Image (cartoon, rainbow, N blue to C red; front, side):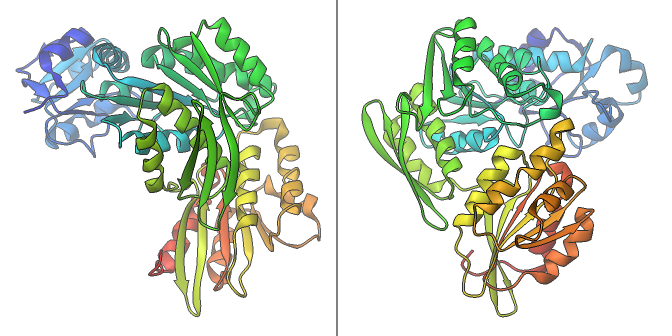
Length: 473
C-alpha cells in the first residue's frame, strides 16, 4: 500500500508520542470527522467554533487509522480505543508536518495571493499544470492558518507541481504561511479594495499582500501585475525581501509577460500574449478580460515553474469557470431558456466592475434582458457607503436592463442610480429571492454577484432547483 506518511515519519515530523499500536502508515489526513476515509489520520484541531477532540470518537468509528490529539485533552478521550499520536498542540503538529512535506518534496511550488482572482488563478494553475505533471493544490479556499498547513501536510512526495492559495484580511497573516510554503514562484494577481475596512488604503493592502515575497525560495521569482498603481511599491518590496527574480505581467508595454490583445465572444474569449519572445494565442472557455489577465499570470507562472509552454496552452481549452466564480448555466422555463451567471462567492469594487462588464458584453436572446442581481460587498468598513454608491458609474456604462438589489449597503447604490433605469430594492436577500425566481423569462441573462456572506448563493440555488438545466448546457 502507498502511504502518504509512514507512522515512523509522522512521529519524527511532529515529535508526537505514540499511544497504542500505530499502523504502518496513513493514506491521508482529515480534520473533518464526517468526511474522513478509512486509513486516514484525524487531526483534532481546536477551531474558533468547534474542537475536533469532541468528534474524535466519530472519526474513529468512521475508520480513522489514528488520531492526532492534544496531551491536555487525553484524559477526556480515555473511552476511545484507537491508536493515537499525542502532541502538545494539534495545529502546531500539523504545521510541523506541513514543513516536513515541503522539505521532502522536489515539486515546483507556486503560491498565489491578491485582492481579486486568486482562487480563479489557483484553479487555472491546477487544471493546466495537470497536463504537464502530477499536481497538488489547495482545495476550495484552504488559504488560511489551518488550510495552508493542512494542504502542505497532504502533499505526496512524488508531486511535480504544488499550487497554494494564500489569503488574508489583516496584516501579518500571509507571512507565517508563505514561510511554510516556500514557493519558487509567488504571484500577486492585483491589489483592490477588498477587506478595505481593515486597512487604511490600497498601499497598506499591497504591503500585506507583499508578505508573500518573504517566503520565496532561493533563486525563486516574484510575479506582479504591471497594470496596477501599486506595481512600483510591490516591486520595491520584492527587492527588500531579497527575491532573486522579479517579473511582471499585464498589458503594460514594459511587462515581461505581455497581454497583446483580447477578444470576446458571448461565452468564450481568446487572448494573445508575448512569452519568452513568442506570441502565443490562448483560447478560453470563460469570457471576460479579467479572466484573460488571470490566465496570463497562469501562463507566466507555469513557464517560470518549468512547465512545457505548448502543453499548458493546449490545456486552457478545458478550463471552465468555477461555482460562484462565473460559472454559467442554461436553465429552462416555459417558453424557452435563460442564462445564469453565478458570481455569488465573492465581491469587492474591482470584481464587481469586472462582472458588470461581463454582463454588459453578454448577448440576451430575443426578448431577453441583461439583469444584474447584486448583494452587499462585505468588509468595506467606513468606505462601504461610497464604494457601493460608486457602482452606479460602471452600471451606467453598460447596457444593463434591470438592476435588482438586496442588502443594507446596496441601498446606497439604489439611491445613486435614481430613476435612470429599472432599479428594484429589497432590504434582505431572502426577500428578493422569490421575486427573482418568479420573474426571470426566456432569453434573459441573469448575473448574480455578492460577497458570499451576503447570501446571494441562495438565489442561485433556488433558480437551479426551480428550473432544470437546458439540454445544451
